[in-house]
Image 1 (cartoon, one colour):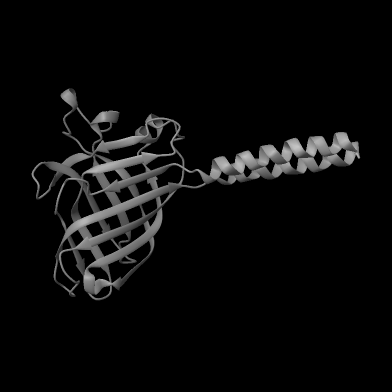
Image 2 (cartoon, rainbow, N blue to C red):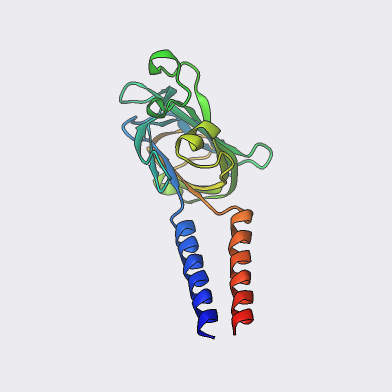
Length: 219
């Protein structure tokens, strides 16, 4: 009986550790950084769209390697000078998407000789599941959905190129949203969190089942 409980205890401890690892999911957070104001966001009273929104930095935490803060360069001009990555999106069901293009020179993503961003790559691409303009009088909009990352970027972080992510984004404009009137974007934050793949959850369930069977055999 004691032996069976011991086996079950070891399996339970392993399950807890696995769950803890899954909870500490990698986060890839694209931000305006020091790029300043740039790009525009438009609300037509029904749908929301944005283009040329500057993304100047990405903060990476919880990854197996490469954690830190990196500059994102590209072809969108920020008010502070310099060229940065570009965020574009549309919430219209006929053309629903979110995308960030740019380069991360410190990780060798999308850069040419000398580390210059001559041909920006797609760093994030996905769809918007939901959004709101609850605080539109203050120019605040929110969106969330699922996306995929640049395979080279995930590989540089020690992650599988097929790692699934979900995002939550916030944009703050210079003024309240007025239907049909573009607003310049002061700040934006696209926070992406990896979530367990079905195969990972299946392995966890299989381990718990094996522990239960071992307990019965040794009871």
